[in-house]
Image 1 (cartoon, rainbow, N blue to C red):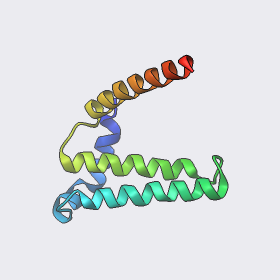
Image 2 (cartoon, helix red, strand yellow):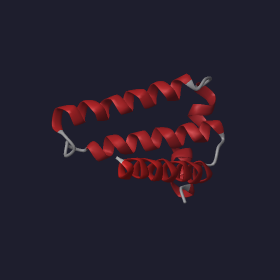
Image 3 (cartoon, helix red, strand yellow):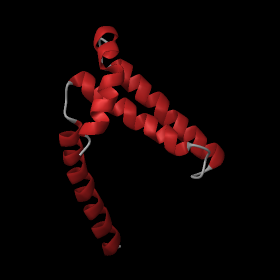
Image 4 (tube, rainbow, N blue to C red):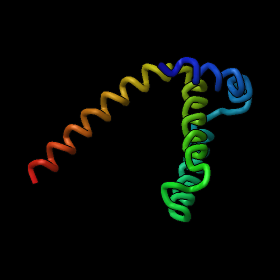
Length: 99
């Protein structure tokens, strides 16, 4: 499902990250920075902010690079997260219906 995307990111950055990144804090910091950029743009420009989708894409790329560094399969991680998301949305909608 995400194999091609993960492989593309791996081709670009895996070797550099394996040589230069020693702790997860690098990726956590980078993800935090990217999320902050999206938040700032949204606050300043709203949901139609210029190239906000590219900024969100940056979060995806950093996430894939992090999974590569951890040597984890993005497709499996995505499937598990999707299942969690589906359960959470189901609970959310059921809760809203009871109100």
